[in-house]
Image (cartoon, rainbow, N blue to C red; front, top):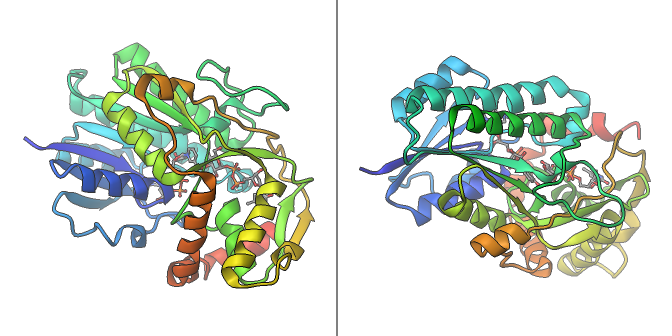
Length: 351
Ligand code: NAD
Ligand code: DAU
């Protein structure tokens, strides 16, 4: 019997890379991609695999418990990889409730549906919850987030993800649900919605628009190429230990302003502009409220226990990402019209 695996949020940025990897690498799995197709979900991300015989798309909202239960009853999943979420910190500051509904209640609905289907007979089953390093809060100038770092989320987004992590662990502790959780650092790569730093700035540089740097620009993030995150998810799903947490990171810390300057240099080269031209677009604006100063991941556990490490250097990953955005104008134009314009002006006009 073929195994049937549910991937939630598979039309989004990271989810689409995970779906592609599983559909192509595991022809003996049926992969069901469940996604509500919010502004961040886009089936254009998956046109290359949409006709694969082992792939099915189901449009559903994880906050709709009855619908989720019916889907579990229909497909009888053997495993779940849960990525569906509201994922953008700035939006969580404007509308926290949609983050609480999707990230907390939506995760609880999936856990309840898994319990009802599997009837506490967990043999061969697995619930994989994809989470973020932001649950650990903010670091000072030194130190790294470890799996044992106490949770200290600071934004409505990270608080909702932290709550969902706690609920997954509580189901493991109370009902013996076999789960794994990973907490990953900032991803970049193809198909990321251009409200996040790297694709937003590539798009703005291309269009000669200001590059809105929050605060002093000296905030630090640890960047990982999305395909390497998908590889880690594959490994943890198949070889991770039940009940364990694994941190995933790029060993690749950058202060925002240094990363932005690098991006400007690369974009000048790619667009055939004079050196220094794109950097003139850098504009400091009002800071993000409650902005976490620094994230940095200690990914030594997944490295030592499962042998994972990033396969792509930042130089290669960034080059590939820029090339993808410059050669996928239609994708970029499709997602930056209509509501995106409204979002952009309300987010940036008064700062
Ligand atoms: P994304 O915003 O690009 O995609 C989220 C997907 O979830 C979209 O396809 C959207 O349509 C879907 N979705 C949203 N609400 C839904 C709902 N109620 N029901 C069903 N589907 C819904 O996000 P992403 O950046 O790909 O992140 C995926 C996951 O990885 C999230 O759980 C996020 O917290 C986590 N994560 C992201 C990063 C990052 O850097 N982007 C890093 C670490 C962890
Ligand atoms: O660390 C993992 C997290 O990384 C994920 O859980 C989130 O889903 C993902 O969105 C990301 O969160 P960040 O808030 O770190 O990503 P973002 O791209 O929004 O911002 C990166 C940094 O750049 C952050 O310090 C804020 C800054 N920034 C961002 C934007 C959009 C700017 O200076 N200007 C901007 O316009």
